[in-house]
Amino acid sequence: MRYYIIAGEASGDLHASNLVAEIKKKDKKAEFRGCGGDRMKGVGVDLLMHYRTMAYMGFIEVAVNLRKVLGNISKVKKDIVEYQPDAVILVDYPGFNFRIADFAHEKGFKVLYYISPQVWAWKRRRVKKVKRSVDKMLVILPFEEEFYKRYGVDVTYVGNPLLDEMAKFGTANRSIFLRQNSLGEKREIIAILPGSRKQEIKRMLPVMLKVVPHFPEYQFVIAGVSSIDKSLYKSIMGVSDAFLVVDQTYELLQNASAALVTSGTATLETAWFTVPEVVCYKANWLSYRLAKWMIKVNYISLVNLVMEKEVVKELIQSDLTEDNLVKEMDLLLHNGKRQRRLLEDYEELKDRLGNAGASEQAAEIVCEALKPNN
Image (spheres, rainbow, N blue to C red):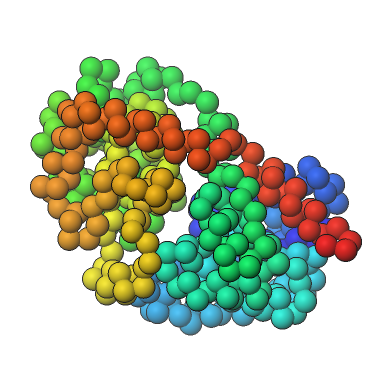
């Protein structure tokens, strides 16, 4: 079979590459083309475009780069028609992939969507578009299956692929981690996860670092990513008494006593490693006002959304201040009752998410969907 697969950012590239690897185990003649990153290329996807040329986030950035975005969409449409795949697999990245879903459906290609965009949070009218253009939704959060079923969408919860990654990771050696990163043995660690995009890092890291002087007995360690030049982190860190580690987020979380985390998948990862966390988020003023007008959920962190209650504190926009961060961090570190309740909720969260195996189950569904009479 021939598959056209599209991911538009780093996390999508990771999960798409795992899906491709699992499909290849089940379909020995599988061929892949599409858009994504180095991980997808590494498992044999012939890339039309790298996600670095596609990744625009937020209302303002998309508007400023609209010509490039539309140009990329046109290139992909043309390439799909020339490639003539048996299936088009779309991975998250809604602004781009919804347009491709409509096009592929109109051209008669089978469309499967892996990792649902957060239509349940905002733009619920897009569910109608999903029902019209997507043959099968493969979702990774438990409540998403029930949501889509209410609208008559063919949907299956396959589990969360983050669990696959964390299961593969195993256990980090604390002494080696500390020694390799010149971290002290005697002081406990507070992790800072400022996000993986330049915009997020520029907006989140400066306010997160304001907490550092208030807890001199701890060492603060920033989770950097290699796709961002170290100079960006260093320019923001300045003379701050904080450390930077790159591409070692799981190792960092395994050795952290608490964390400041930018809202996103990292909130789930932090909870899975049983690290008390404060969830942080700040957007530019216009994007925030538009999102606030459109958002239909009570929480922004995946931890709270899955649990359907406030498990972790969310500091959003004007609430994301130095004083509030210090207050919440102090509670996480020194309030035993708060810690116990949080860790109990984390255990229930793990139960709700289920076990590893999302990539394998998703691959099984994809291959089954392409059999005759399906």
